[in-house]
Amino acid sequence: MSTPSPTEERLRAALDARARLIDAHDLSPYRPPTGPAWGARRVRRVVSAVAVTVAAAAAVAFLLLSGSPERPHPTPPARDPSTSPPATSVPSPNTGAPTRPSPTSPPATPPSTSVPTAQR
Image 1: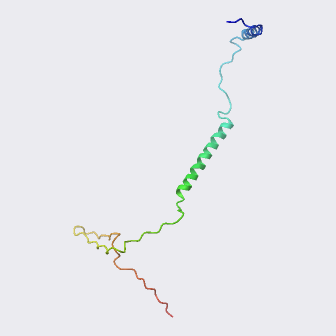
Image 2: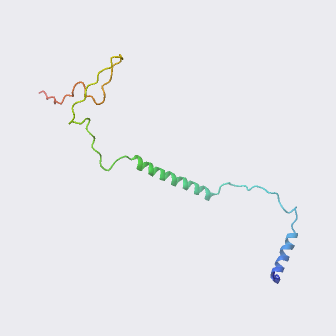
Image 3: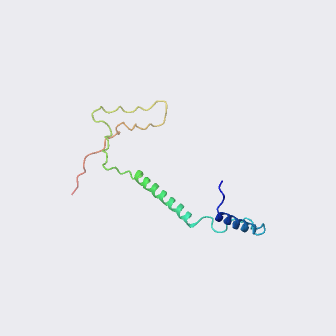
């Protein structure tokens, strides 16, 4: 090891003298800090992070739930016109409850397509 320089020796001596001036009575017991637990910067950071998260979630929800396609798809026909008409449903003899027609069976009476004439 090398010998310390005169400046380093003087600095060590000054720090040692200063440390000897402090005794146990000069030291204060530990006290928790008083004042706000969160700084204003931390609160601002948390609020801005929450705002950005809410804005991103709202944008994603808007895009997913808007549901308006660019061009509407045509509605498929109720039944294929090239096939024969479906068979009518036959009620089961075991149950006394009335049966509902199946969604594929034609209605009991066809709807009227005639236009009523205006009477004068």
